[in-house]
Image (tube, rainbow, N blue to C red):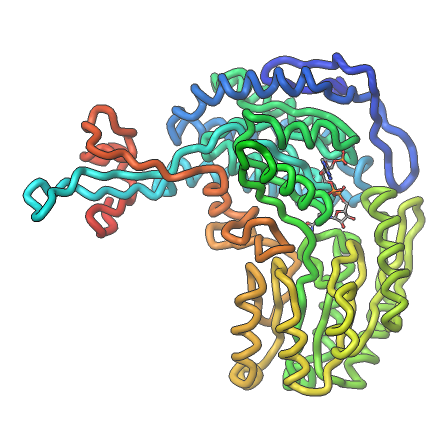
Length: 520
Ligand code: NAP
């Protein structure tokens, strides 16, 4: 397969635009061939026209047909082999192990959704059978299930060129739901995006999917992204990125004549609490693992632990200092992300002191890791300190009492995760902390670290605003599918007209809630 730099619109490729953009290796500054052509508004309109038509066919595909399609996409991504891995590395400055791991995660994610579709019970089928004799009024036959929402616009994230990008969680869950996807590629990894886009196109053709089920558009300005959100054919948006970007897209979506849902996963600081007894017992190990978690992937994870809260402990602070000065930074994903990181650290220095600065490797976008320190009093007074600094940094907030720990927890905004380290006795003493955190985050972990998000059925990668624009869902794991569906109720439908999932003899053998009882 060869890179063309052309926008993918269904089964065709286009480069009508005259503005060229190019990818850059963030570590060396080298520009990478080929030239990519910024999509035009006409191309966006053509993609939406095709997607709307395709939706009328794709929405009726069976779970098995969609599962085969997702499995074929996984196979085609695997077939890209070293070409994909090499391009990923040169566009992201991330190491080979991470590239291979992320490809595995992306393929695994596609296969997990395929399994969900093969099983079929995810549609949440509910049947209330008719009660013609009921007094004073008979009950009609009422049946409901989840149906696809329409054409979905998806934005690629900078920090996961595969797993949160072209064939990442948003695209996969939208396609699994029965929606067509128009994808706005992230300008930091144009080539990786095109390769995966071509793999999806090939899979769509091989599986007899309608032309327009998937399109991929390039742009390095906000023009196409904004037009995508405002386009009347688009019925929902998936996004991972900055607070600024996610909130701008959300505001545009709710201001449309027909407002649409925006599932934006934005910044999160992922507080980690270390309770007093475990701090004494395992402070050294916790300090070591905490600094590793902060610097993993050059800190460019939305689950990076950006704040650690604990009660004063001199030994623990010494250990943190040692670990942070030993730690290794790395090259960041883009020059812009490096710039934002350095500015964030400079700004925080006005209100905090530095515990330790690590080492930086060679490279144009290389940065050092930095661990900062402040008191609960300062933290509670200064809202800037709970804002995300995307990169290998974290703020240690030292408390003088349990009350101070609880007041800091009360002051937190919405986050993706919260972590608590403790012994059984600690947890018994701090149940009130766990109660507070449950209201602040999408995932609470005990005695672990938040980096490393399992793709599974029970995973929640979401949380209250400002972590996301919709706390009722997740962008990782199979629960993500219902972001792109809506329930439809069929009243008094004869069996012949009902979808297979709702027919009386249950031909797909799925789990259904029949007259209030779960049945196969
Ligand atoms: P971003 O600036 O939010 O961009 C993400 C995508 O959204 C890009 O395709 C971008 O297009 C588009 N976009 C952003 N603002 C837009 C707007 N107003 N209108 C239309 N489209 C818009 O995020 P990023 O480039 O990935 O990284 C920048 C910062 O985001 C990082 O420094 C970090 O703070 C944060 N970030 C957070 C997470 C997380 O999971 N919490 C993940 C990644 C990044 P263009 O690039 O063409 O503008």
